[in-house]
Length: 72
Image 1 (cartoon, rainbow, N blue to C red):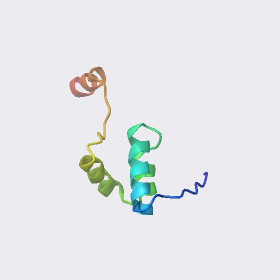
Image 2: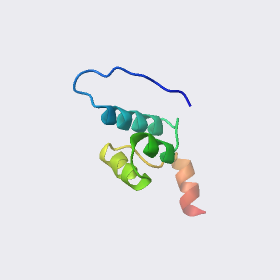
Image 3: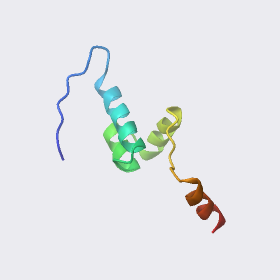
Image 4: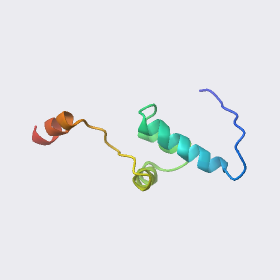
């Protein structure tokens, strides 16, 4: 694990920065849901709700993959 020291601009709280970083890393597929939730300091369930608030999809299936999942 790498430790990152970051100077945040005024008005940006550490917890907010961790949450936004976790959301973005999850959204682009860099980390799993569990790791993102842990980074943000939330349970998986709570993090799923937060993803909904930020309109970040939990599943990222292509139309073809979704069709295969639904009709198999």
